[in-house]
Image (cartoon, rainbow, N blue to C red; front, side, top):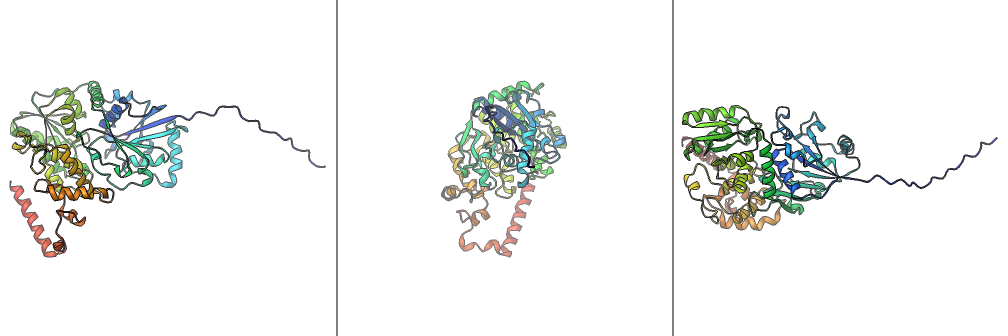
Length: 476
């Protein structure tokens, strides 16, 4: 007996409306300064409307467990209102460190699904706003959302230099634009220009408004003495640019220079992750000099102090805060130690070179009495005095090419012209003769003498000369 025929059911067309796909913007920030930059850009309507805005906090400190994340710092509260939700990248990838972890390519689809579930993104169209795209955690986040457009914002001076490493074109071509603060008026960032990403400025008025809100939210802003000098710590030993002992000596030089300018009250704001012993060397030197030293123990944005206390002088090495103080608050600023750091910084492609060059070229030297007394001719890059933005644009183009010639071959004529016409005792510190020689640029070793770097006797003479120069400097 044959089985009964199965009933045929015809599927009726569905009348249900498919769920609407929303839009989510993910803003990644690792510093309070960066979060304030994002808040200012949002206030200025620099971003398209979105159904949801998520702030992803990254704590990149060497030991994140002992350092407060930006959403735990005093002054963050008013920034929180710009976002629908605040999430922690450290918690999402725990126990890995944000600066060291990146996904394996085969794991990307699984990890993207994990993050969408963790953050409730569903099938939303995602846009990612990143800082420091050339390193993790920014690169890792971008890799985990391979279909998302990327926008980059700069929370410092590095955006004026070239992209530190050659980016995967699959990532670089996703970048729509670079947002930045106009820290050096008239100077255009070089970052990501190899991918045609246009630069857009975050309005200074919006940024200052946000910083005012941050200052108002700090419960107890330290009261600074009248006519004080504010010293900015950077914790350069964590970047392996200086040893801890050298960094302590740099801070002591800041103190001595401020005292030599006539300041009897000095305030030191250490980097939030710097060890406490850095302030002890300053305290001993202040006691020896007979001046009043105040060390701020609570991490607070230097801009909060600019807004509330108006110091008479701001001193640092190449901190972004020096340019914020000068360009946005109109405060007198001075630099210390940039020349020696330019010699020490390796490799030449190190992205800290551009902030160093800007500080050395544009800001007066604290230890040069004539430099602060006379503002100098802004067109004269051959002197030791501050220079104008137009001349610095040519300098930065030359430095950018020497740093990354493969990324910016079109800048070679600019670099050659600059090195032929402007290279001198003052500007020579921004270039390495060996580097210029390798690239066949003016200022390098002439072709007929190119054998010298490979000559053992010549190398011995150079080493002896350098040792003698260091010995003379120590005696000074």
